Structure formats: C-alpha cells, structure tokens
Amino acid sequence: MNNISNRTLGTLIRHLLAHLDGDVQAAYDELGVPFRPRFYPIVQFLLANGQAGVNEIAAHIGVSQPAATQTLGEMKKLGLIAIEPGEDRRHKQVSLTDAGLSLAARLASLWQAVHTAADSLDREIGTSLSDLLGRTLEALERQSFLTRIHAACPPESENK
Image (cartoon, rainbow, N blue to C red; front, side, top):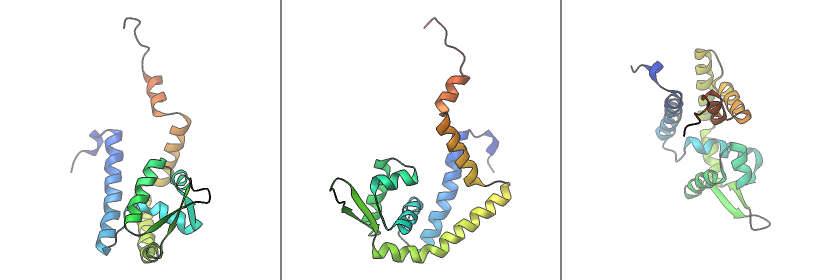
C-alpha cells in the first residue's frame, strides 16, 4: 500500500473523490444504467421541485452555470431531462423526462445503499465526512485559501 501520509492535501482530496465517485460509477455500470455520480444532485433537486432554471440548479448544487449547463447537456443527450424555453425565453426550464423519472425510481434502492455505505464510512473514521467537508467549504467561503496563504507568507523583500 502507498504511504498515504506522504500525500499533499490536494492529492488526498483528488484520491478521495476518485475512490468515492469511481465506486459509485462502478455500481451504476454494474446495473447497466446511463448515469453518472454528478447527475445525482440534479435529479434529486428536480424530483423535489418538478422543474427549475439552469441558474437555480447551478446555485443549488454549488457549481458554475457553465458546469451545470455541460452536465445538463449530457443528461439531455441521454434522454433523462428536457430543457425548454422559460416564460421570458431567456431562461431555460429543466425537468425530468419520463425516462429520467423511471431511472430515478430504478436507482432509489442503490442511492439508499450509497447513503448506508457513507454512514458506514463515517462510523469507521469517527466523523461525518459530509459534515467535515461542509464545514471546510464554509470556512473557505469565510476566508479563501489564497487569503490564508498570503497570511502565512513572510513579507516580501523590498528588493524586487
């Protein structure tokens, strides 16, 4: 096994995401379904709200509008969502198609298993990973990592 303690913070975070997303993707692949882990928060939001604008979805899931648009485009190609012009034609409305609703129903038990697996991991590590990551992101919203880096840097020399 590789020595995990020698890895940097960024490497550890990328490695964690690769494990989590990779294994969830493997579970989708085992079922033979056209679904990606990044679709999940969008589907959950649409299940709860019926339809929503692209910007509303992006804000809710915490990604940029272009990132949301790219993911929504993939979902539309797979037939999971419909994207229609909004009332003012400038804002598009997104909703799940019948195929998207059917797939969500089919994946409900897998999603519950993913939550149960996450709870198991939380018990093993002695903390809620979701809560820890949420608190970390909130701290970075209060004070960016760049600001923290600047605070840790010694003053620059006057001789540039």
